Length: 76
Image 1 (tube, rainbow, N blue to C red):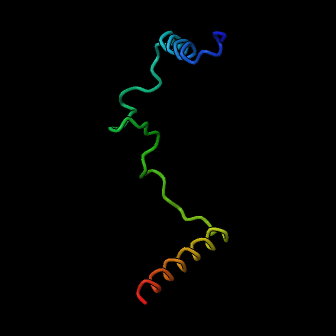
Image 2 (image 1 turned 120 degrees about the vertical axis):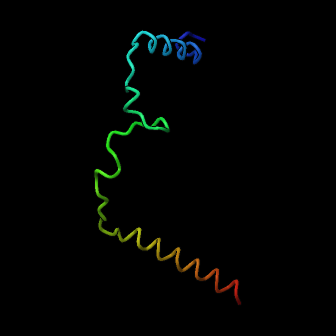
Image 3 (image 1 turned 90 degrees about the vertical axis):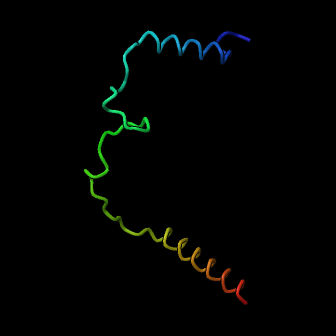
């Protein structure tokens, strides 16, 4: 087995490369309470509806029909 095929060696090389950089990608102020980077707040951009895709509508209708069918069969 060569050194390039060794996954442990690759991980060690990656750790060494990370240590050499030394710069953090984000400051503490840019990271939210769960450790998620918040580039924009959810309130900044309004949610706008998109057009209905016929394929999606067909699958929703099939799901509704299947659910109603299961309930009807279960009741009878």
